[in-house]
Image (cartoon, rainbow, N blue to C red):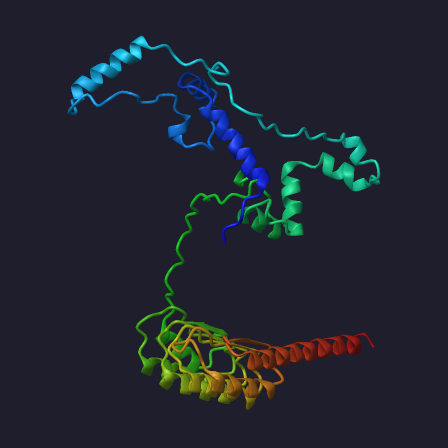
Length: 355
């Protein structure tokens, strides 16, 4: 919506127009010279002093125009600047950061009570401070190598990264590979059938190529054995058929204390059957069945395993991966109860011997 101009505005504009009309061409040109060429609020055409007042000279000739401009630029004098140009000088007010007045250290510590720890930390070496930082959990000051060395009671080296906590590759440690398992399965079967009293541990871990029938013969031979306490058959390719014989062995044998059958090809139902087999005699202390073919047992299998462990009062360690919270908590609590009952029994026997 347009607004009406007031009488004062009309008078001012009339006076201004009358004043400009009274000036001649030379005076108007002098007024144009007073315009600041660096005024960004004016268009570029108004900030330029050059005004074309000549008539057209004909068709465009580029070479002639360039020669004319060159001669004109050499003959004309430079404009007078309002402020002379100084190389490197910045226009306007230059921003400077305010000065920060730091208080002396004595004023900061005026209200802090000194303790014996101040002297200890002042005289401590860099390795000792690194070890202290690892113990207190200040992992931002140290790297993993220093933290691991402090936790395992090894000498802490400051050359492994210092205080910057930067990841640094450690020198390669060449470890001698473990020798292959040279246990003779046939010899173990023969000694187990003979109930050899010197055979208290059978270790067949990592022996590849054992036939299922040979494993069944070994497990059947141990059913009536009274001397073998540790049976280790991890990573031998045991299938469910051999797993059923292992469950029968645990039900029949009362001497075995530890059975390790990790990294085999057992399925969930066979694992449940092996855990249930420990309920008959309840003489087994440790059972290891982790890392089987079926990595996820399932809720049903885990619940059945937890129910079987809840009825076992002698099992102390069960190596098995639980993905469900309920069965894992139940198994953990039951194993704690069995350990606590064993501790109480040991204390009671000590008191009886003293009396």
